[in-house]
Length: 188
Image (cartoon, rainbow, N blue to C red):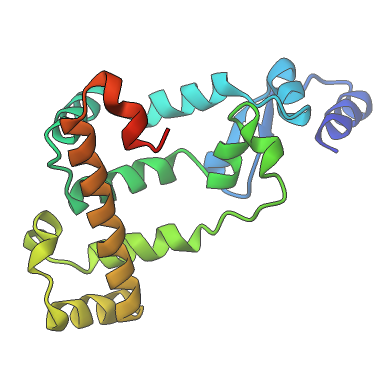
């Protein structure tokens, strides 16, 4: 459909196609590159555009600081929120996944629930700075307050904290594991 539309626009207007939109928001407008569009249509992805979007959004200095925190297993919910917001600036998750070679075709029909990201963001924003830095202080009363502030249930808060704890556990395992032991950490 996209390739046919591009050809039709060129034929009808007699003008070259300069920009395309891959969504409804202004951020979804991007320069038109026929070779990249062909790759997307054929399910080969568009890694060049993906990298360009990442470079436009990601601050190199912040990325280095984050890498150091990850190596020390000091990743906080504030860092996680920052990552979610950067990912959001890159565009829709469905569109980003479609740019990764081989992945877009496999999950073409799978629906990526972007509400999960909004819920997670709302939960973290409902926390105090202290709670974001030290999630272990979240008792039942605080969890109820956070859930109410985000307009979600306490189960959502519990799930977020459980996922965070699992991620921190994995980071600690990776930190202890040497390069030869990585396969065992990932179950290989």
